[in-house]
Amino acid sequence: MLLWQLLGLVGSLMLCKGQKNGVGELCDDFTDLDFHECFLGTTLNVKLLLYTKSNLRCGREVNHHHLSYQPLFNFSLPTAFVIHGYRPTGAPPVWVDHIVQLLSEQEDMNILVVDWNRGAANLNYFTAVANTRQAANNLTGFILSMQEEGAPLSSIHLIGVSLGAHLAGFVGANLKGKIGRITGLDPAGPMFTGATAEERLDPSDAMFVDVLHTDMNSFGLRGQHGHIDYYANGGSDQPGCPKTIFSGKSYFVCDHQRSVFLYLCALNRTCSLTAYPCSSYSDFLDGRCLQCEAFKPAPCPMLGYNISRWRDTLLRLGQTKAYFTTTATLPYQKTSYRVDMVTWNQYLRWGVVILRLHSGRNFSEARIDRKRLKFEQYTSTRLLVQFDEDLQPIQKISLRIASGNMIGPRYKIRLLHIRLTPLDQPDSPLMCRYDIIMEENIEVAFRPLPCDPRL
Image (cartoon, rainbow, N blue to C red; front, side, top):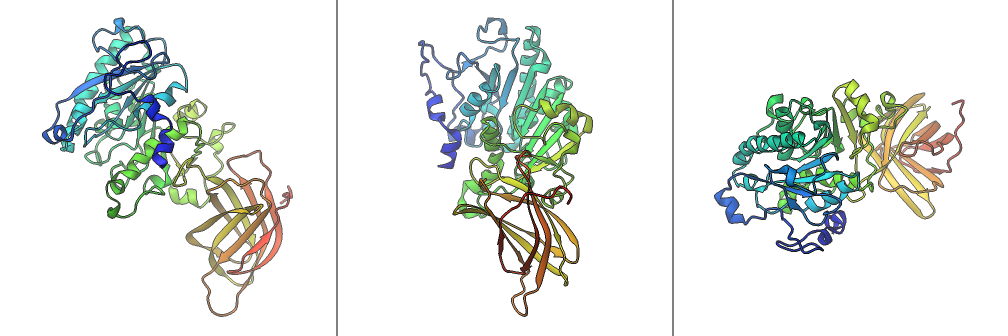
């Protein structure tokens, strides 16, 4: 059901083989192979399907050698290439039509789906890896032909998924890094771990390279490979994905595929996925990287198509790591607060924080239990607290510090002040409360007050 929600009206966009468009012309289709063809192995063939605003529902195959005879191709417009990855079953990717539709909504452009299914569809993964170089050479020749027709290399954007991300990198390297942008969606890890920059996607392959990681501990590639690398939920183990092998195929592919669905959601603008530049995921979760000072007056970087607000800063900073967390389902985004607390308790206590936001009868809970926190006399604690729901207006806040102390007296903890700063809506008012006496393991509720600017 979730997949169907994400793909929206994909069914209305997809045309069966040989189906005609509204004016009676036959549409060209993405290659659909049978499993036995993958089992026997396929020989590389690269097919380019062109989509523009005038033929969004009917791809037209482009002749590699006669571009001047392509009336739909406007060489003065930007061009986005969509490059799929390894296809062990030979079936077309389920997301192709949807990404075409969403890209067309960003700006007026040519969209080329790079269909190298014959070459990517092999049970032998090593054969598909070897084919990326030849496919890249084919695509390089086509882009050079585009350049001869007046298309500037800076107007070209390659979007590569998994193995397709490295294929895009090889194209960029062939063109001396002069193409405008490469977006890598969870670049493939197997056969590329430990590879040199020349053997994989890297920042020198384009004028700007952005990479999204979702499965670094399995099918994805660890490390930094772009001018900005986004790490969703730390870059591996995505929420909602199966944790045991008994879930079948989904156990193997869910984390890896999440990169595509997060990107689709960001293109659709239903996901506002803000990422925070930080040296590590641990520091991000500890609330140490929430200011984005280097990007001001622009906000923190966001995943998606339009990166113009951050591009110059990122190019100046060099390679940047940025982290964000998501929910398990659409629209994926969490509501984030920076929480600052100052405690003044007589005895040293250790515990985890459980915070609830209440609006009417509804509430949303966040449990900060990644590690036990230290509470002692005049201890200042900063936390990143994220909720699955954005409840408004906030009428009540409840807080519990769980120490795990099951026997003996409950020690009191004095909270000199607590301040909640909304990160997703910086213009929203801060919420504070002052001088609260609470007991460990006991929830205390209070109404938020306007914050004293002197504190």
